[in-house]
Image (cartoon, rainbow, N blue to C red; front, side):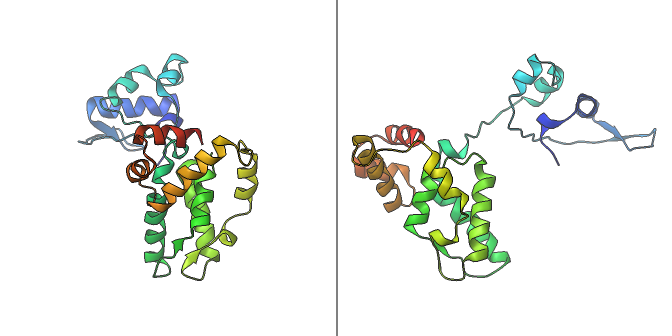
Length: 203
């Protein structure tokens, strides 16, 4: 496994040949094998920028780019955090420990405040760390890795009592109250859901 943007030019040429001719050959063999496959490729890199810099084959780019889906990073869709966290915790506990613990409101607020430079993988690592330590029915702040508290302090601190702080506190409380459902939180706050998501991204 690997991301398409990390492949060498030599490997890209082999993938292109397989897609165009629908044939592959095993290592050490001179006999071709017919294949009929559909390819789903993923990368965190800008492939078009790599094409312009001659780091990625333009013919392979156009062969792959029949349909593209852009998934924003977690910091731009924080309303998904409760859903993703719940999904991961339940999946992990089904395999390891049985009944899944819930997240305390304080933990959920900390996750909302974190910028997640490591994206969804970082969220999984944080939750896995918490699940190792948690033996009860609720994951609390004492189960979180210590670095996350230092990271939050470094991320755009807001003066207490400022209008921006009050607005952000209201948004966080609404998101917590409605389990991360942006539409319901926006309705409760009396603003459009697009406005709420824009403010949440800035937060």
